[in-house]
Image (tube, rainbow, N blue to C red):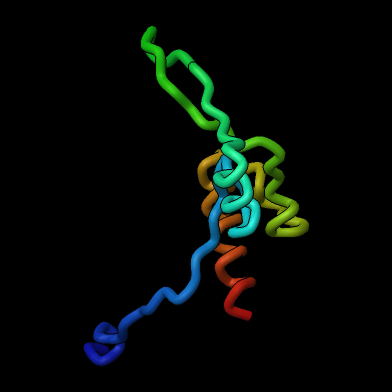
Amino acid sequence: MMDNMRRRVVITSVGVISSLGFTLEEILNNLKDENTLFEKSFFDNEVVIVSPINNFNIKDFAGHFKDKRYLNRGAQFCVASAMEAVKKEA
């Protein structure tokens, strides 16, 4: 059993879900064109600056995903970025 615990994991890809885009091309084009979006929001009576992720739908990344109702928005981003990373390796 100790031999199994010594195995290492190597992450060789990355998936990105960001306000600048979901692919490398989108992100680079938005940075080049200065298409950044920052908004003021309020949290506990303080102003915070946010960069919302628009046009995001977990179905676009994970297909029919019946358990999505159990995931908050942050967890959906994690699933989508993991699916993108796996897709790049295939």
